[in-house]
Image 1 (cartoon, rainbow, N blue to C red):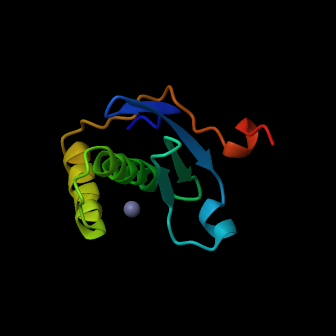
Image 2 (cartoon, rainbow, N blue to C red):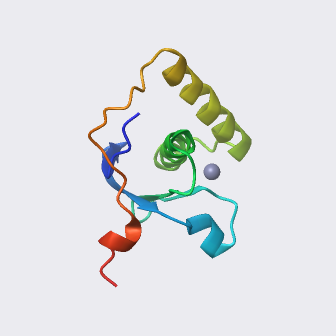
Length: 111
Ligand SMILES: [Zn+2]
């Protein structure tokens, strides 16, 4: 599956930041985060490739939940993530394009 640096969700352009050690450094178990106010998704690259792909789907569903006010429970979001990712994988709809390489957030930050 492609791991993009940006993508459009519900018409909004989101940036996707790939960051090593994000969960470890912040003392959180979240392997990814989505902030729809600043239209950014962060993915922890300490995960295996499949974990990053599944996390991206999770955060896309989080963003859709926000923009369309679906009010999904987190359990539902997690279930949809797993189920949708499995369909994409089992049917080879999520073939890796090979043209995308995650860029660490540290290299892109201006601070
Ligand atoms: Zn979540």
